[in-house]
Image 1 (cartoon, one colour):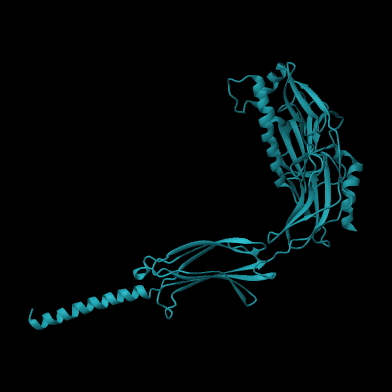
Image 2 (cartoon, one colour; image 1 turned 90 degrees about the horizontal axis):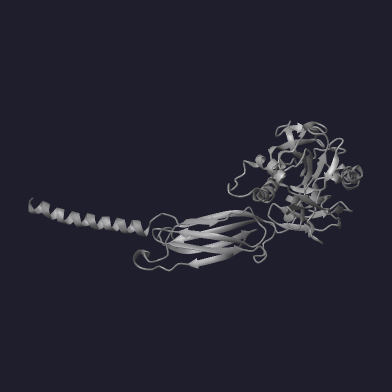
Length: 454
């Protein structure tokens, strides 16, 4: 290579290198990647002080400036502002990630009811935009709603027996999304009254369990779309009621007759029959009652039953609701349970009729209750038929009052042929005798419902 070409080469190569280094430097200084912004949660409504989690990051030039603000009606209020210092060459030691939490309190921010915009702006140390840097901006629209829903009782006189059923009628404001009644920690949902001309009218069947202590906390409850809650009081009187005590002697003969039915249950093969019985009477009973309670979610929002309720024909009451049963074996008390239905005895394999119009929501084996049918009568009300020898209906079938749903028997933990009949309100067992009483229904249910037509 001659000297002229060598000189040109030695001149151009360094120039290319310099230009390359300059381009690389400019690409770093004027990089165009915007910061990443993540904010959670993103609620639709703001009804009370709410905490938000904010995560921001910028892998290249690093974070420079953060502003979190809220805007309503053209008025902007800064909630959080932070400057991030430039550290080291190219800000390599500066902040590239930042995580924090902040709160929005409508009252402290003097926010009015209505729309509000939450805005997060983050700049980096890029020299773009006249040196201001890349800007990421995230906005979220919310509705400030701090006004709780209204709820008021319509039923004036509400008398309920301990262990019995109550019915309350009430009205809620249009923004209510969920409402009902609490008895201590038990919640009973309300359902639309079904009268088009009376918007917001609700009916709620509720139970006062037979083991409820004196002076329970009973109140109406409502929640609106923004999560605001309301409580409403109403006049009620819970009548005390005594329940019978009963002694049941468990014989070895009884154990030999009923235990084979429970061969499906996981027993320790080494335990004796009494231990098996106790496991059934305690643990399996609890499992069964949880299953009964879960059926409350299958109820229809509209009333399905109508008129009088019927009971097993030509049957005698063998055991009552709320009976406190003490179990004895060879003179020693071994267990104690509460009977949550009425036992009715007629002829063996007697026809069992639906107590009222309804829909089958369960028809299968139910542990200690044996072959069982459960009918939904709408709005949280259900009837239970247990210890059947045969089931003649299938789930989801609609049945009319008086329709034969099966035959009496002694399946499950039954010592003889009979029908265990129960009534549930919101998954809680109540005294069925009330629902066989035409006068009780008229005084406590139909007269209240008639007010909807006034």
